[in-house]
Image (spheres, rainbow, N blue to C red):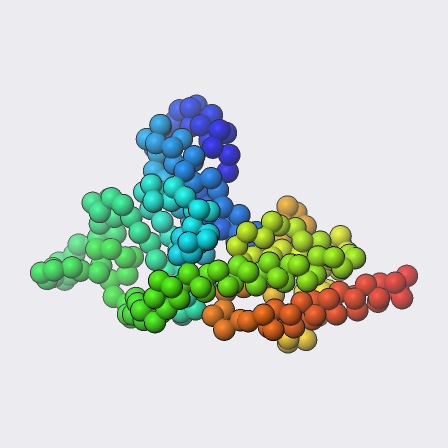
Length: 257
């Protein structure tokens, strides 16, 4: 997002505004200029939400936290636990600066909902009852500690750079993004069919798994490095599997031609 363009749009007037900034694009890992966006939004009284599904975890790393500079000034955040923390899929976290606004949006009242003293979780989340999702997040953070969380984020980002470096010099493979976090976006043969064939071949091979996506109207392979146990050897095997699938695909095209 361009903060200068945001100022222009908000200057046109209108009703209440929510600005949703991104910390870690799901395809590329790119992070919006959060401090500039928040400053522009404040000039027009807008609420700023940061979608930081995995990008907000850069704040855990002394080396990377500059990427999310300014995020603390937002009105709300959302992030996932199932990515870098490796906890169950439905563990998400939302933080809201305005306590009153949070409870006004979430709390429920009914004759059969008797309010007890102390905190009632139904005043803070969409569900009136649920299992203890927060326990897994708490346990993971207690186990990792600050140093462990920083190491996990740093290592996954370094491994993503390693993977990109192993494949980018291969003819016919294009790395579509600047690898700033843990996301690597690859395209093969400048052709949707070739890219989809390589993705399918890698999934069938079983050495590594990466899904497909679309980026600026073109098919791409999306590699996301976030598992706590992934090491350099795993990345090297994954790179070899991608290269082998690409070479087989390119060879079959030449043969068919």
